[in-house]
Length: 172
Image (cartoon, rainbow, N blue to C red; front, side, top):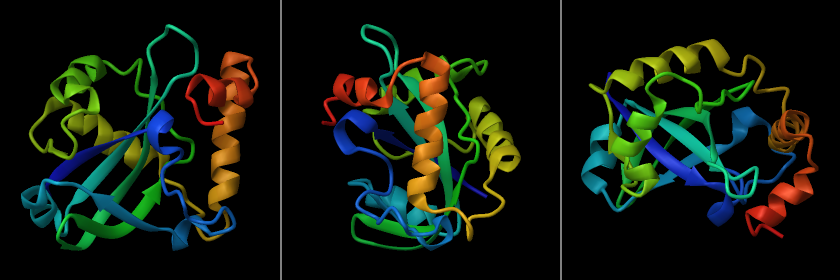
């Protein structure tokens, strides 16, 4: 099995999966990964892409990074690959995981786009976290409910309304 990482920034792109409807069940969301690195997309067939999600939660502080999902790639064409996406529930924060910041730095803080990370030490942590936190009832949870649960967790953790986080990320 080969492993890849794709990075998604809330401030630029909103929540992963947009514009999928909020009432769509997690099991029905078709995950499409776009990359100019078609050689990685071709190589990713039958393998796993982890989606890391970055969001600013406090002014002048580091972003929070989460393991949002893992996708087993079924097929690709041109600059797009698609497959079955397994959402994380709960969505694990990576900031305090040992080795994460070195891993993120090696990824160019997401600026390098899709990267193959099979042999990287932190990949074992992503595999373990994805197995431990996989959503067990994706046929019963909608995309909107999943996002609202994530927002509420951020509200609780940072004691701030999500509206403030949206403003900070220029998402209003």
